[in-house]
Image (cartoon, rainbow over the protein chains, first blue to last red):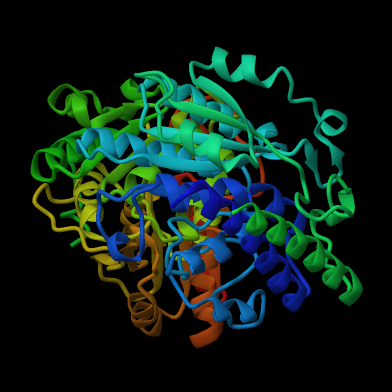
Length: 278
Length: 318
């Protein structure tokens, strides 16, 4: 897939995230918009996983530790063919498997997540098993910045470094905001890079909306042999819709009909601009 | 039958676990052991020496250990995550719930030093709530074997069961009276002694206390049926109801708080099907303290005399 196609996909994904959240009248809008470019790159450019090989023990694994941004993952999984996209019209409805956090009832999901601070340890265990079985696969997890306050993440980081899990890559969706406010006001996370490096990981930083740069970095992981990789993806919460960007209420805000139309028209303009460039 | 319930040696149930996991490790190469810095206490050194590549030391990070175990299970491993019962349940309840139970992971949570009988370390380490916590987790199997041989057999048997298991055992040397060659069947209560006056349902170390009590009561002309409930969940309801239909009253015995444990599991069955008088032998909603196992069992109402008194109360209420 070309970088141009990836960029177009990102905008399409954003439109779909909004569509299904709008339809469900529920969802985590801001976080889904901030992490969707990361998912786009992983599923379309980096990982060896698809509906065809999903039962193969050698497939790459993705676990969304920040489970609440599940709408982005649903949209991407549908796009790569795990299930029909129209299923998402049942998002968050009674009896639907497309609930508010990932579950394995949905094809393509590796893990049930949602309670924060669980994904990284599970991924480390999975990466450890792959090492023991000599399977050349990679395990990826997406962490939220607010989630980094969970001590369990740091326990898992110690272990992953100790066992030299260079088949493990954690990506931080670093949009600098969490439900109550800015990370810096809730509980300071900085200096993050130094902390993670001190825990024995190889760290890179990237613009989390630059699909080209992220694909380059992730396709060259591990960043350092013998060390797990940590990619700090600097993102913007609510990215792509001007009135949602960095505005706290969009953490799980649902757009009104007018806001929805406005958001779509903004994204359509972006789409047009990109297409013209081609 | 009561006379045949004797032992020649005392051995710790945790040693039974160590022997079981070693034997199992030789049979099944998918079995991996994890430990949060308590290798000596869990008696798994022989497994580690024989299969170093299948041992994962996590350091003192029990929550992490449970997450790592969940991850290993996703790759088809059968992880035995080991630590003290306190740190295997209360400390990591969220991991047991979210990372293991919710997706029905094939993780075996193996916990030593349960209950009062760990002795000297005192209340911080003497968990009396773990059966209740694990029983409440959907899909969890909860097992508390009574002696060395049974713990060894249970350790081996749970590998054949797909799904999360809480295997609870203890620290002290304890009468080892069940057969060395037993086949452990999850969920199958074991009738140890037939009796007519009362049904004693006991689990873990308290099975031997029940036997001692029954021997004493036999001399007074009281006939006790003793049933070893090694699997608290799923409970062998049929065995409970069959026994009760004959005896008409019940005593439950457990090294656990009176809330949430074996007694409550049995009471639920009785209330629904056959409400007969029942007495609990359990810790009365309190924490423990330091002491020798028998000193503590006596002080907290789990002594042989306490079982005898409970039997008499239950019979009187018929």
